Image 1: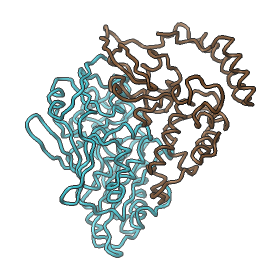
Image 2: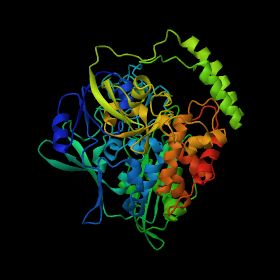
Image 3: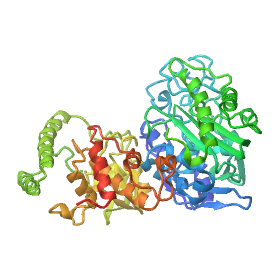
Image 4: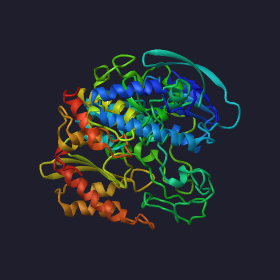
Length: 341
Length: 239
């Protein structure tokens, strides 16, 4: 690990000021950052410890939604009464991720900024990684790409400085995308809200730019709109073992039902792209329809449109389609009545 | 720093402990200890010459820090990069907490920080300043436990149910298990509670225990006995 200066901030303003130094990073749970510092993927010059900021509350908003402080730990968020009862999709996603120890440490803001778990990104012995070393190429394209992207990736060949087929590893983010969350950030002289769909960036031609967050901004909260999917929500996570593993594919499915008719749907996929994958058309096509496998299949086809697999991950295309149908089916049957997957 | 390769307690202590174990009827523990004594000598011999701590380049700047460990304030001077795990093991000689993967993937380093289980390998020591840290050494009811009844019930249950083989993951398993039971008492849910619909008062069924203990890997595969130990304490039927 490289040397750094450690500072504690006590107010968001102080944190933003300290974080504006070149090479500074905010330290929250540290579950991803400290790990990557050990691998020397991250080498901050200053660590601004923000764990003592007063951003640990979940509060009810006038519009019926909630505001989640950036430092609410994943385990506390999953078990918060308002989240468990009104946004069970989020509780399910959170409790599907990592381990109890890591969930006790990991924060809402930090989870948003999780880096990819691409092996070629994490291991500095591989010279080619456009995220870690812009312009160096993408070792995953011709490497072991089982956990890699099938949607939204940039593939101009392994040697291109624009290529990147990494995925975003978060479960929490997939649920938040389906719920239509917003990310509240604070800069040196302003505050702004970023719609969830605009927060994470696809690689495009600049895979090293991962979010819409500017270097001098601090995430202070995530807001959720009024709950729509409290009764019909299911987070399906398919992985190599049943606990404590990253998703091969995951599906966050929320349905708003009017009798046996779907009035609206929120669907996002995890493990398939560099951001939670959402297609509004797949949600619109379900509105006014009955919750049948045929209708769900139609949504799945729209979501996976244009998917492209690699040597080790082509199976994900069919897996994701079937996952969408299964998650929507279980969601339509009621939140807690889903069979164990 | 204390001698990091010393695995062999003085013969006098070792014999005394063996005598106690024999008296308590804990033959499996006795066998394990004899095995570890032999294995420890072997690994110490093979490890000589390998660096224990990989020092980074440059002269690291040390800073004063006070860590409250097992109820006692400990004043140290540490490099800012030091993890809580290394502070405990290398600077406070509390080697009960183990370094497994050092990347938050195995749970061997689990300790309690303000009563919550965390991976000490991913916690910077300076970030833990001001918190109450509890390690495996701080769990027993007395500072110098003489028999089973002096131990924390979870420690006793692991002995009773033979919840280990090599024992390396055990301190992390025990700290994690204690927190798992506390969490369930406070109504904390797991994905199993959500999938089975038992969200009002989740019971510590075997499926729940397995899910809630999934952050602690045991390479020996002593899982059935670990689950038995946790189940016994959860139901209040342990020693």
